[in-house]
Length: 505
Image (cartoon, rainbow, N blue to C red; front, side, top):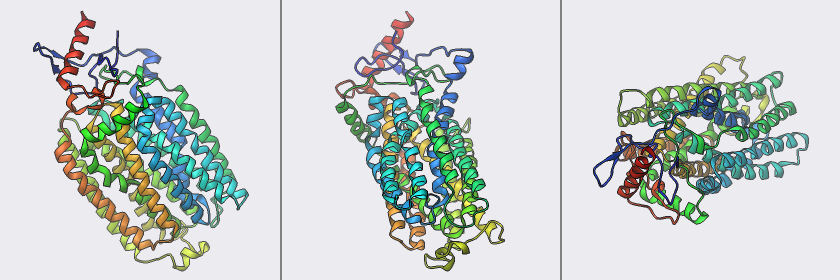
């Protein structure tokens, strides 16, 4: 008995689409095919929340620790230029890889794509350890950054497709928050380790022990995908299954990327928001945290920043998944909250940014930077905490908006690929601007302007595209056959209805 939709035979369930059913020509309606979830330990292990938690652990160990290192500023190095150049290489290859990563994900499967993507993080951290031991290893760090960009494109595309496909429509905000909390605990723990090992250091680079600890954890994280269940066996909490293709040709997968963009062009209105979503890290990590504070204080700030992300993601989960409120209303409410937060935080940040430049004495001389024991530290650390909250709100809202456009994991893989590609292109530009010593105020102004522009472009997309339910007519990629043809909605609904009747009869 077929248990999922496969390209070519169009049989299986209508899972993930609005539960109102689809009318066939004989006037009958078919509802999504429902499967019984396993019980006991197997049921717990294969539960969507458990699997998203495991997904979060992969990102806890790999990108989470990368974030902890980046959040310290300069990858924990005294000279931040090497870190900035490595990030430029990283996000340049990330941008190119991510654009096509949706096709790779759908061809290889999300679990294998996730596994391959996790491998680059250990190499990147090892390169900084090598730099600590051999100061001439700057080229290795930059090369490792470029390799990590390829791996990260794979990891984040697989992550996004699973995180948005496993929950039902009513729980997408909750699942995003669960992932975001676990993922950012990686940044919290990593920063706490960095803070502890560098507590007695007020200037210079992080110690070798910090890099070694991070390296061990990233290797463990790369093993976790081996123990996750096959997405084909995932049964959602409402009893529906995912729509998994049967690995069509690379040509069809690349065509699917085009079809996703052509049939749902409103995703383009989210591109400015995608661009801004990593741009602001450069100013926050290097121009604020890296420029103002000594090494142990930077580590403490990083820990607080990633802790604040947990708060931000939970706030947005409550807003975006609020029961008894229409999805369109929740979308506009979430947008409004993020809009207000952007302007409050950046007005606050401008108050500090206008007081220093790259030529300021304490920026040039690390020994003169702020320590957490000083009185002037208090206001600045609270701003950094609010930047962490804003980041989580921004990223959670972007993911939720994409999830509101589709429930098909294949289409979501393309969307998250677009997201990570454009996001990384922005990050590459921002890190390159930092590497060539663009004035701090220019970096800050571009950060603020991009955030405002991203939200303004997203507003018409919410108005025109976000509906209270996702229907089969919205899922052109799910209606593609093995030859890349998009089948009519009526034909797919009729065939699925006939399949359900046959299985029940």
